[in-house]
Length: 125
View 1: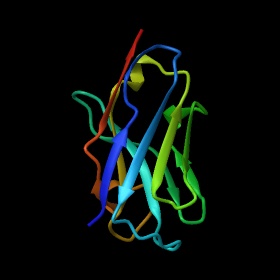
View 2: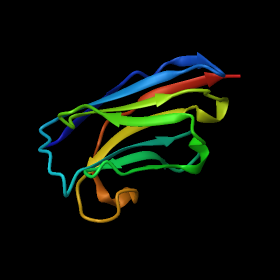
View 3: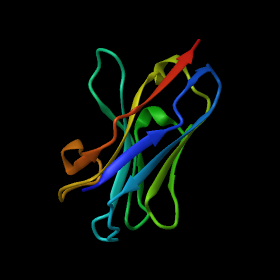
View 4: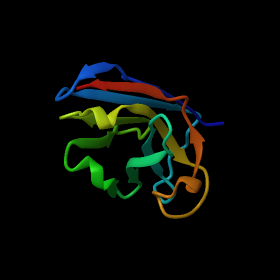
């Protein structure tokens, strides 16, 4: 069973930076199936994709990232990172790490069968 644990969330001022980490255990890497990503959910809003990365190193970002965030992973493909710069109050949310559980396009939430508990990011204006 895949277990994901996020860390790195904190309260920061607007314009600040944070680096989120996600440690995966029980995860067996397969290039053809690899798909991990970051999602977020703000109070009263639906969960939305932030960034994903697949086994070919393909990366997709949400439009609102606008070059501010960078997703990366370690060589073992078991730790996922999200470097977030130029944070704004609109980035305040619970951030979740997720890993593929099913086939399909590596962005659609239904593809992700494994989710962490989340790490809170709060940005004050």
